[in-house]
Length: 507
Image (cartoon, rainbow, N blue to C red; front, side, top):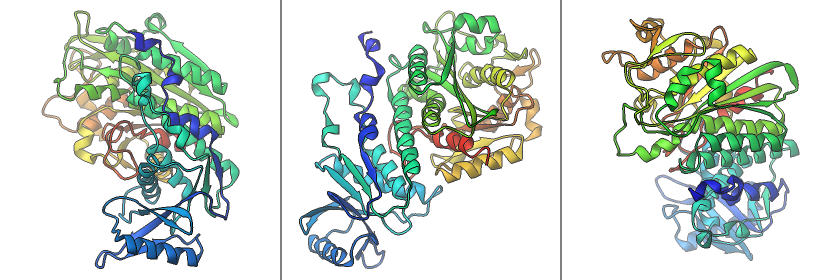
């Protein structure tokens, strides 16, 4: 299709380029349009301006202007003019949420972004509110300015970036230059992650996934290795290959190596990259199947992590691995009851071809553990719908047979504002992935529930003695209703958790 000939950089949301150029400062003097937080009192509905970094006289005039407008916060942000200064007043959410206050601050930035789309400002000042992290507000602002116009007719594309501020003042913030650049890098990594999540599956297929990974690696000086179908066959990765048998597009196993300060240690990030999952022979129902383009969200988060880490230099080496494939149904597709041999040598009885992510990860994890011998390996995958029943869309599940590893991931991820909740890998469930006719089976028997845990128990069979944790992000990767994330489309969830795992590893 003609769409496949488009250069991916030409399709990127305009905010990606804007983030590279916008001037970020922590000046003590406001400039341009000023964004101010307000608190709404529950009983009286009184509006209190929460902007300690602004002068008291200006705050008083702003309060009068808000009162005169009769604003209560329910209609969204308010725009008023005080002393010839345009002010955007928005409610700072006081809801106690997991991952707060970072997610609260990002939510404030998301709300403000809706207003900025309708106005022009050469400079923008984020005045801040009590206990606010203004860099996180900026992060949310950048997420709110994200769009996916690149796939529209060129005549219908809106050059919204031309109206975006050229300068952002984080009024009185204490962030140093390196810290600000780290936030800028993370914001751009989020855009890359969400773009590959949201892109249509006839564009973002395994081949394009590999092309984008190669391009990013070249830009940032990473070593990038792509294994195609022939290499996978020679290595005996028949578990991964079995997933791709029903489609016309060949799979790709992608390795991006990021050099760290301490080259004697390695952290491995492994992502499930199912660019479209029709379920294979165990075909999914048609309702909602279009959302299965998001089944590569774990791989997208790993790609985003590779971008971010390449910008900030991690404390150790990091290898970012993506198992990219499609899971389609045709005459060559794997059948329920088939037995395949994995890279590790273990054979797998495939009882449901829609439990395919674990088949891709089985080979990716085993190969990564053997080749790179990482001190820590973390995988991220939209592995099970069952995790939605347990955790909803607020946080992701983390599983590990090593408690220290699980605790480390939870603490590191919380610091980056992505909450994780540990699910146990009960030893009693190990027998449920054993097969009577092969070494393993890819799903448990119908009477065994705990689908999310079973997925983790299965993957643990392929990590050997490596310290490993599994993140099931199926409830948070897209259309999340949690605070601090866009309510529709890709969220980039998992990117920050894995970046945190790498950036804090040697501390």
